[in-house]
Length: 296
Image (tube, rainbow, N blue to C red; front, side, top):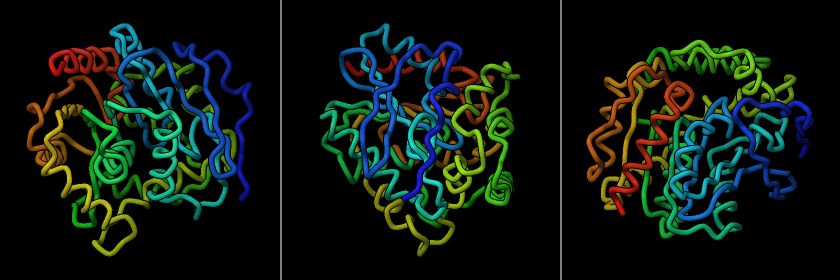
């Protein structure tokens, strides 16, 4: 399998991101993750086209409150190696990569924080693959897909655009998913992992992985995850941006809320787009800390 490894120098001088990656080997690749702090682990999973850098604003409040932050870069993203073959990427492989990290670190009593594709990957892991290792669930601007869900026109346009542009501009996708105007150095950090067409296979292939029919790959696992969530009694918290153009609060956020019957009422994060961690990361970090304290 051919992979691309982003040169380390592209990750120098990342703004407000002082943490060094930990590397491990998995299926012939070098995968990166952050492992900072001590205490109960909080596993934070990114989606498309971001990487662990997205969670930097949440990490401060969580670390200060005594939590351990584990933040992987999925294969094809961030400082992890990137298979260059578009056909390599699948929900199964991304899920397997997360499961292997949990097992290698022997994480228990995990709080899952998942956004965008980090949601379906993390929720499948927490309900089907390793439910005994998770104690709490936090979901943000995400979903679980069984092929029966209705996708918005904005999302369909986004899927077709990304799939049709092999050298898709990552900075345009990230800026389009935020409310605030991002500083050039922040946009540079999001584009750092992807210096060429070969490095962007993961970016291109994530959107088409969402099953649009019940017989599509991943649909059965999505339905199984939904079935588990609807009977799940673990504490859960759902946060949603007020200005998400891809997965709007109404109707998507309220529909996703129904998957968590024991959850707190949906918390709306104002002044935020799809990448709400970028727009309101500090607020979200403190909100999660307060919620975790209430569970204790």
